[in-house]
Image (tube, rainbow, N blue to C red):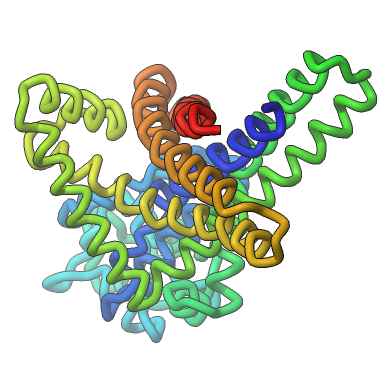
Amino acid sequence: MKKVNDKTVINSASSTCSAQSTNNYMQYPKYRNKQGHGWAAEDANAMADRLSGKKVEQVGRDNCLNGADRISNGIEIQTKYCSSPSKTIGAAFSDGSYRYGGMKLEVPKEQYDECVRLMADKIRSGQVPGITDPAVAKDIVIKGNCTYNQAVNIAKAGTLDSVKFDVKTQSVSCSITCGFSFVLGYANAIRSGKSHGEALKTASVQMAKSGGTSLVVGVGTQQLLRTTVGRSMASAATNSARTILDVATTTQVGKTVVEKTASALVGKEVVGQAAKNVIAKGMRTNMITGGIMLAAQTIPDAVKMCKGKMSAGEFAENTTSNAAGIGAGYAGGTFGAALGTFVCPGVGTVIGGLVGGVAGGLAGSSVVRGVFSLFK
């Protein structure tokens, strides 16, 4: 039983954290648009700030007119990525006036010097309200972490830049997954009678498996979501999620649960269709992540069955148990993330989702295996 539990912990933790990273750090539905590279640049630069230790809020997702794209360590930043410096600076002006007063303007890395010069010219011509000194241009314009071409590539599947970005995105949650898996693996090993040294070895192996699985599944999911096939899967998953939520909210209890969970996840009160949209967004990504995770689990078992190393009954039990564990893990992860967000937004969201996902995964998997054991 221990082996099953360890495997379930790894799969539940990996699936939950991979989906959380995709939802929190990637605006993939917008990447296919004509200006998709702009949103990719927002995500890439925000991730660079996070990895440098800054507190980042991607507030621009609410599409507020002339609002900041993100707040990094309390500084409001608007990101503009166009094919030339003149177009980049021009996009920040409307009717001859700078649109983002009080905000920093983030530009492609290779365009920085020319953008500063162009901003200084705008100041000289009186197009930046409240600013008269051209030297201030270098304080308004900031250099992005990536170039224009890198942003274009990040929005596409199968490019080196997009894979690098996905690895960075998933590494944030993978580190927490690894730590959680190590602690749990060590505790299980000690309880089973292993020595300190043996427990450390066991926990280290489990940590490596969990982190590796989370990284591979997460990167695979994010690459898939950039493709036509992935977008079609996301659309189908969204429709399925909305159907489920429509049924769930036919009762007052179901409606209350959905609204309370959604409100906790976003940190503000949302009701009705807005609440269902919040949950549906998470379900959409989790369905795809879960599908990739299930495939990763099922294919090796199918090969074993074909080689006669696993019976059809064992294959059916493992597949059903894994599917139930992933599904229940998502439910537990959602409620855990909501509770964690309420207690401590950010870190609490990730840890709450991880703990809830593992608990749900263990419960779902155990129930299915219990049912199968009745027929043995």
